[in-house]
Length: 389
Image (cartoon, rainbow, N blue to C red):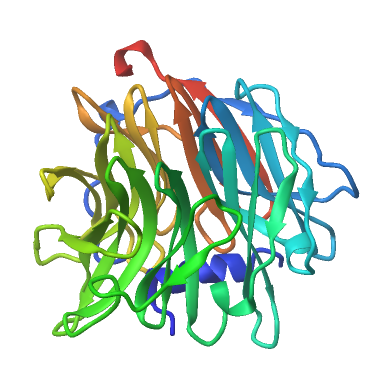
């Protein structure tokens, strides 16, 4: 069964082919950073033309990646990934799809380790129209290989969603959820994953329901983030888990505040984990220090409704940058070393209504943002001003 954020994420994937309380005050105009954005034109992939669909962006080992699909007039998609060595000149990578759903997938999550990239794709189908998840791997020059996996690895009667993936020194991990609660899939090389569900501490228990939304590799293994819905109240508390091996997990809850809170995204900033997510009627950030979560500021505001969430988190020389949905629009925020969280003017209005997506990637001073409102997709880049290095 799905509810809240999990249902929203799943609905976005299902419909690809075709939260909260009263708002807090908006930031004062003088706090807004207004960079000079430039829109990029991506090369069309081989084959019939169609509508561009963008879903994720990342940088790994100095190489940039964008992912999504191309949708024909009938709504049939085929997977697309673009890569660039400089974020300016882009080319597509070849896909070696072998299954019906793989050849029609939209690539919605990217992960990398060194020069190896891995990705997750989805295409709705079957009797209930649920997303059929596919998994891929390859090198920076391609081709991208589809991994043949049993239906119940990512689907089946216990499926909820498959969220994000990451690579690191211990291999690869995927964060997601099953009926038993938060779950993880692990692999030594991204050529095949093993599901680990119902694990102690990770899965739901008498303390409440668990949900996992993102994962990052750390020096000690893995850090997965999400939330706990306590058994004794209708609320959520931000929750993370640490593991040395993907099998044994330790809970790392955020300090309780009495507000609705959850971790949506996580990234390492100078080796320190930072998590960003909902905090009551605003967005919040936390940093993990000595095994405990410390406050790293609040920012923005949310509108009443179920679709406020953090869509992406990137690390730049100017600090972490987040793209968030406030329930109506996607907005950008930068954690400046001397000013705290600063609003960043978007390159264009980015609607978060209906079938939409947004993402952010960064390296050095360069920032790339994607926006897709379901009718058209765009990519913009900019360089952070010198004072935000």
